[in-house]
Image (cartoon, rainbow, N blue to C red; front, side, top):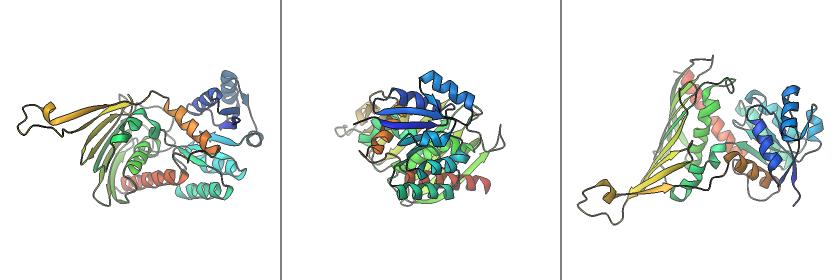
Length: 316
């Protein structure tokens, strides 16, 4: 099949990497990039050997699909502009700044019959891929995501900036269980918006998730622990690995050590760049091959839960 003509809208810290990957992907034809900052857009285009489009409509007229990595408050505007032209869209997380925009994006993609994918990149994490064969009915989630402060992303609360990654994973791994209750607390430290937050999410059926996110930490941490009836998974999302621990079927009645009782299985998956995998999945969905990995509907669900967490923080 011919490479899919594709463009990148927004080439800041993340969009630049979109463009870099797509320029090297044989299944994609990177037509060009657009950015409201023409100097930055031209510099990125020169760096990776593509064309800078000052006019967004000019770029949209030449592609079948776009990836969008602009600030969250304009996701709705830019996404709808591309969808109105019948272009497939990969929107970086969160899907939108509010549920009204999210619903418009989903409806427009459905009306135009084109894929709408959301950039929840942790779905492609090596540790998540390695854990897949051992995942069952998770009863308790414990997630910690800490990052040093940086100005990028502070146009929204840490809940929409960082925590939403884990909210999406929890919703995905809970296999569609409805959320019953959300409790949360948080505080603004270095910005006018919440910079550190903790949420407790309770699901119908008894599942519980305890999620912490901070963008004012001294070190970077991304850990996820999953407790299910047949074992315990400890995942290091930063390193891309983990372990699965479960009771040994052949454990002796009177054991003298933990290793006699518990089997520890290292979790490893092939080392592939998560962003590269995400972009490949998008190109495949544009070609009509497999279904989109993170749909607009799933992105809306993560956004809705993030907004519930934000409301719970505001409610004190």
